[in-house]
Amino acid sequence: PIKLTLAATAPSWASAYERRAVGPRPKPQSELTNVVIFVADLPMPRVAPMQASIAQKDEQFSPHLVAVTSGSSVAFPNEDPFFHNVFSLSRGAAFNLGRYPSGSSRSKTFTRPGIVKVFCEIHSHMSAVIRVFDHGWFTVPNEDGTYVIEGVPPGEQTVVAWHERIGERRDRVTIKAGAATQINFTLPVLEPGQ
Image 1 (tube, rainbow, N blue to C red):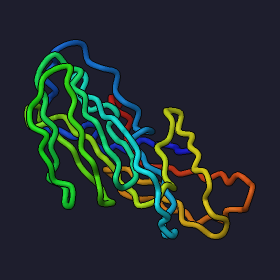
Image 2: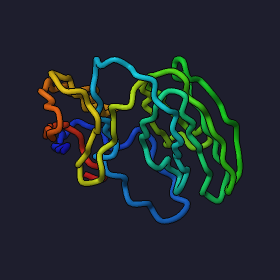
Image 3: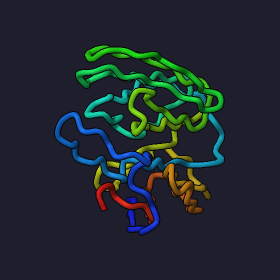
C-alpha cells in the first residue's frame, strides 16, 4: 500500500488563485488516487488500448489522474451547467478540444508514452494528469492506498511510485512466481484541505 505523510511545504492546490464557487465545494479528492505505481525497465509487450474518462464536475477534473496504455482514448464529459474547454501543451500530446456545453463530451486518443498535463482555458484552477504507458504493468491505488499489479514477471524488478508534485520513489524488489509481493511507499504529500 501507499502511505502519504504530511509535508508542510507541499501545496495542496495547483492554482495560485482562490477557487470561484458556483455551488457547494466538492469533497477534495484523495491524494492516494493521484499516484501511479508501475514496474520500470521491463520489455514492452503489445497491450490493448483502454477507454478512460475524466469528468468535468464542480469545476474540477475528476479523477485528477488517470493512467492508460498507448493508443487509449480518454473522454472528457462536461457535467457542469456551463461551458468547459480541455487542452494540453504537453510535448507529444498537445491538443485543444475547444469549448463545449453541459451534457456533451469530447475525447482524445494518446499514442505516445509520457505525462500529459490537462487544463481548462475557461477555469484556470482546473488541472488533471494523464500518464501514458507502453506496457500494462501499472495501476492507480484505491482510496485506501491499496493496489495490485498482476502478471509481473518473476525476478528482480524496479517498482516506482510517481506523484506529479514529488516525482518518483523507486524500490528494487524480488518478485517470486505465484506469490504476492508487498511493497510499501511513503510519499511526502499533503492531503487536500490540510
